[in-house]
Image (tube, rainbow, N blue to C red):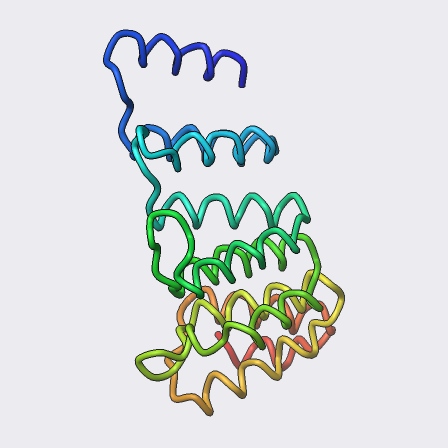
Length: 191
């Protein structure tokens, strides 16, 4: 990370203010390396009036990073500021923002908070009709990774009830759930 920050300073001296795309890449690098404190500093710099500004990508990356760092309260506070319209840059509450944090929670095995996120912000995922298949794929992944593969199989029923078309990832996840529950005959039905 030190090298990245040195390069940023060199680029600022050479080119002046860096744009949002470049700074979002730096923010993503911080998150990828697990350095959420540096990510928050970059976000603060980007948010200043004389800086490049922030956008939906910035917020999505920061939410993902907060989730991965298990700083869930801060992530929810950030979502609330977006929902209330007081977040810098006026981002809109959107499905990609919710799904990014949801995925981080599921990756961390925190299904309690993942379900809390869905209870609180599920309405965003339902705007325009049914939620996407991505949401259900994420939920199934979470149930399997936390030792509840049988519950992942019941998510399939909800997918069908919603009238959604399962995709390849859905079927792969369902087959994996069947294998984990030792229901190989059921797995064969998904081929």
